[in-house]
Length: 573
Image (cartoon, rainbow, N blue to C red):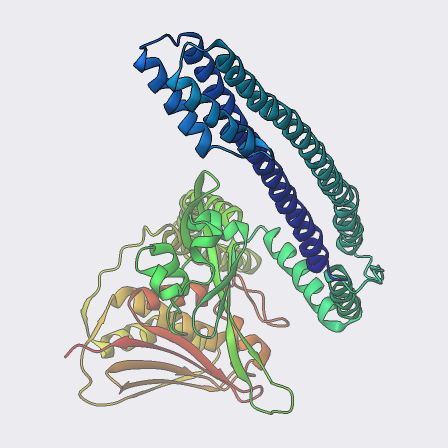
């Protein structure tokens, strides 16, 4: 039976018994009231009338009309209030005797007869009162018994509901609660065993179905995937680098704790929100979602984090997948990673300051060494034999190389600290090429290398620092001479393309392997197997000089076929 049906039947039956109890009680009270009213209405009034007539009879005297009138009024009322058997005959007899007495009110025998008639009427009504009282008493006893029977039934029904109903409801709920706890503890084999056809039976079947599906789900790959997803989220949250994930529409999918700290927002404030909308009011998010072009130099982000100015290197990784059964990749979003490079930046600052200090301090003794060499080479100082001349020449070359290295290190330290001053203005590209060729001509002649200049006619001026640009071109030519064979040719080309002036240095050396092409402009990098005569800073400084003038640098090379190093500068109109 359904729980609802049980409750309806039990409560309904209890409600019905309460109504019956109320009706029986009301009916019993009504019967007792009716019996009482019957005594008062019929018998008590007759006794009252009879008492008044006795008082009138006692006061009756010859010529007392008022007393006779009072007796007649009460006798008339008694005549209208005849209710008991035999009362009518006695009342008629009383009437007859009173009529005789009224005509002769001094006759004592008639008074005695009237009094006797009155006593007879009173006796009839007193007997009736006793009889009706017995009936009322019996009615009350019957009512008490009926009320007791109905009340007992109500009590039994209520007691049965009190004992059984809570257990019928609480026990299945208790068992279901224990089963739910087992499910919560990943015991998906737990089942509820209710055999009834009540709501709890339906609930047990639904619960068992759910438990079965959870067990299947737990054993399925979906559960394993979600478990791995949860593990990845935990790993991401515990990473020291801020990480933000976006879908293909730019909606933020996740942000780890480090990202939330530096952004200064709560998870609920950004998860599920469009990054472009948040960027309107948050400068940091705007700088994070901004994608730099390949030609734009990536600068570290300076963010106040961890109670100090910190530096972060932004990486944006585009995520693509190939759907099952398809060949074309689709974009599913981006992951933004901020690499905390604060420690490296601090070390880099320390290194730069150290290099600047050391380089500056070395220039003075190197200049002294060069001056001493010049004095030794002077004939006035004294003649030197061949061995001494070779030693002086060797010292001269080493000091020259040291001076070049310290110059490069000083330039590098100035670039890194931002202290370098560029005198950018209108410059003649022909003059820059001429200056560089003349500066490198002696070095080229030593290896019998021919320098060929190929320039277009009527070239416009460029917006550049002529001295720094000439230094870059000299560095290109020095490298080309170093890696070219004797009696070879180096071509210097100058042309205008797309409102930019292109400077090219083309050699016929051994070339560069493809895997090293992207690294030649990195600081301190030298191609493995090449001559270690430099610091690996020349090309890095050249790149910094040109990019500081809004230009660009690059290299084209094929192994065994030589290399072409180039840079571009903006043309003035």
